[in-house]
Image (cartoon, rainbow, N blue to C red; front, side):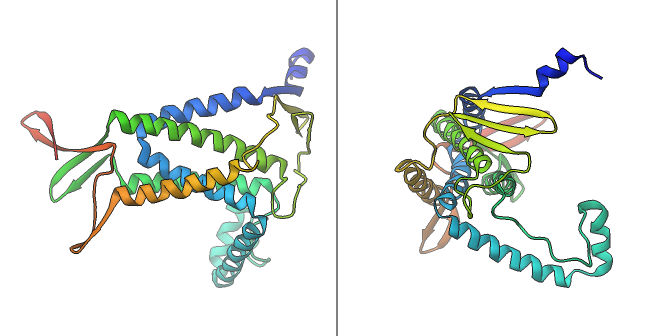
Length: 269
């Protein structure tokens, strides 16, 4: 289908890890600049949890085992007719054993990371929406210049953590049972990561000698994740004798949006 020279160019694909890292960091810096520090801090906390689980593979295995137990219990109560509808969609046999999560597979943790990233976006948007209607009045939350600057810094950190977590999951060095064998085949030698799949050899070069699990970097990430989690709570929830209530986090401003005639106007509120 392809000319030999064109086909051979795609048989050996080389990717520069440093360039990939800079690209991820740049994209997340831009995203954090527009979202602000509070929303990015939610993502930072989830990523710090993943770093902590890599530090303690036995805890990661224990959590996955508990999830598998829940799946097995739910699977027993799934009606057979409903299970039959899942078979063509997910390839699950309703009469077979319950689906299980493999904690030794790096692909499993990549999927978990994507789920947590999506969950962090939903939580941040639900907790601090761009616009909200309260008692017939519409409000908009706008990021201040300082909030945008801090959001860019946190976004860059999140991009750095994501790239390094991907590396850890591909090599599988710190997964619950140690190094894993990726189905496509994986080798890490001389600062080079190679993955062969479907006749295409992907080779990532210029890998740094350190990882996010290098002490004390990992513990700094975990400690910072706890710090930003406390900052997220203290900047959004206040507790007084009257009870708990939500407030606008530092680095954000709330504006009341009103429509006067054919024009929209906004005022701090």
